[in-house]
Image (cartoon, rainbow, N blue to C red; front, side):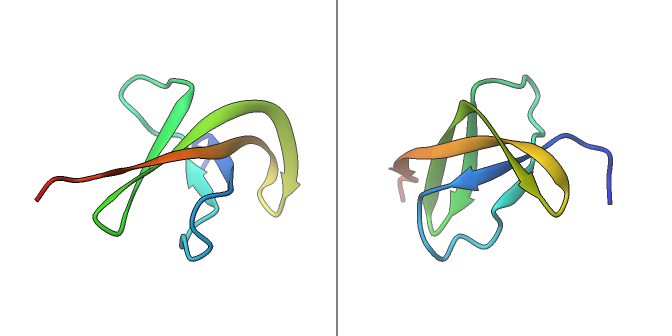
Amino acid sequence: MTDAPKAVLEGGPDDLPDRIVPLTAPEPGPDIKIPFRGGYEHFRATARLRETTEGQLPVYEWWERTEVPG
């Protein structure tokens, strides 16, 4: 297990493969963008925490999907 900060994702597609994701970005912000099926699933930070197998993690909720042109 790595020491990188992580978050747990709520909502979005039922078949999204990972619900615990690293919080890696050049500039951490209030959103996480996950590439999935030719687009991106967008998750926003909440004030909630959830107990997981990887410890207590911040919860990010799904709020929209954007398509990649092409």
